[in-house]
Length: 267
Image 1: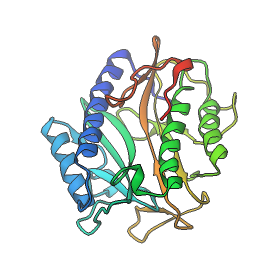
Image 2: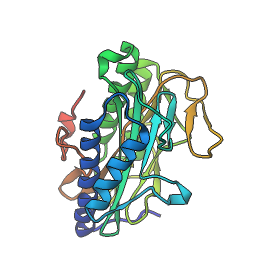
Image 3: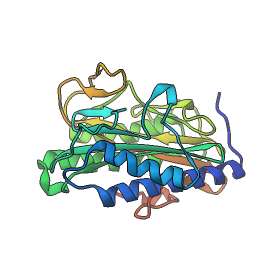
């Protein structure tokens, strides 16, 4: 069942989204070789709790941390650890969520330690094109479109570059619960699926692998990795459909918070 949000609900979710955006911006500024993923988690928790909010993930179904930190061939749900040190050339996907006034914000970013020059160009392109796919998908989140329009736009970017599109893990509705209906796949056919309308709030989150789409879960019960050991990338934003158009609730300062379908950004 889709739980539609009022304008007041969406305004509250925008405050949660702004806090999540702040977490990502401060982690981007802090990231350097030698840090551990637990260092990142401590920074994020200090920001969220310091703002009077609650980390969305910590305690969710028993997850032990504020962030999900997934390194190189890890796709999603990696657990921060003092034993996971980040070296130059590592790819780190950071998923962050926060609860403000009872509503969640949820967003993911994939960063390269040391920047694009520290990795093979194919890896840099994977990270960049996964972000582009996110924004291609967001460009189709609008009143009257269908879920298949979003998935098809994301999948087309992967197909152009030969990436594996993760299918077991997809985007989702979001609100007072972290995961609500509907599921938002990163694949699909234009014009198919449920019709979008004002009041919907969803998290769109493409996950692309440099190799195949196949995945497996590590013995910790959380960390999902690529089956072939290839590098993966993950980007995510929470977006609302309003009477005035789409509103990207977790947009960072270098990203647009509103979208004109003809002017979706590309990185």
